Image 1 (tube, rainbow, N blue to C red):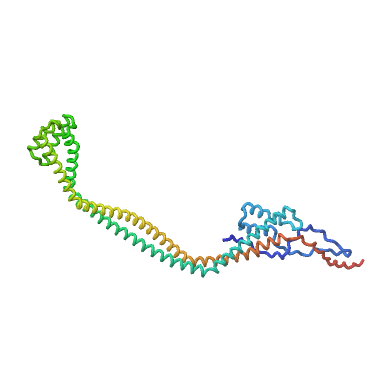
Image 2: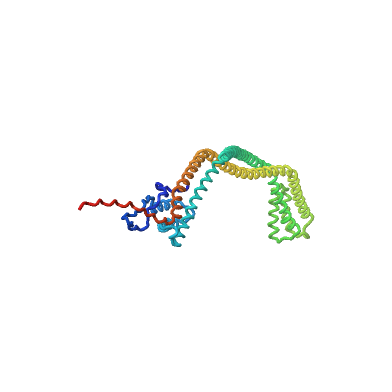
Length: 390
């Protein structure tokens, strides 16, 4: 609010200043009558008016305080002289003071206008605040519902994920149990294929050194026992394979051929068993893959739902804040309008005081001109004394 200057008790300037002209000696007429000055009514002193103006200037806005202080402290020096007797420097300071005084009046009038406009828009403003209360209230309710729904979605997804993880564990156990025999058979098949290709065939073709052949025969005998080969056949095997292919007799070739046939039979049997088990294994593998994919999808969904839930909670808090702010603004409307009405009255009173007080004094001093010479009045001649008898 504008710092309305408090003016001292106003003394009408219509009362003239006490004459500042030098006093003349009374003139005497030929008849002995004396002239005397007319009485001059005393008015407020220049210093007192300048003090009033200086006090008002403290409320000036938009000017550096030191500048206002400099001008206000030199008012008496500038305005103490009559207008026509002021030096150009005094006139310059007086002009600056006039601008400051005018700005004070403009500032008070602007505050009056602002308050009047606020009051004029009171109904519209109240309606807008009431609408804001309803709007933000609904927003808060909607955001609360969204937050509850998001939390429920998180709970549901957590339950689904837990169930899916249990199903995956079950599927993995079933796969392990169901594939156990096939895994063993695959191991046997791999070992058998490796023995045939890396041991038996080189030994049969005589492609290995003697020491390597001996070692290979030992591996073949061991494998033969695991595969339940005929004992006599395994016993005859070293003698047949230790000979060069060209040096082997008919029996040796029969032994080698029989061993090879047994190896191929066992290999074919293992392949057949694995082929028969393949569909079931594939089904179990697909089930594990499906359960795993479901788990991963639910994990991603849960992460997304948790993020959405956090965002929903944040939105709910923001909406609640807006709702509270709107309700608070509506509650404050009455006191604000009351305060605006008071501010308007105070500003109008301030303008009245300023206009009739400091501004009037300033205008009078600013435009004060040297008074005309005081007229002289002839005093009545004193009666002559009666003559005394001699």
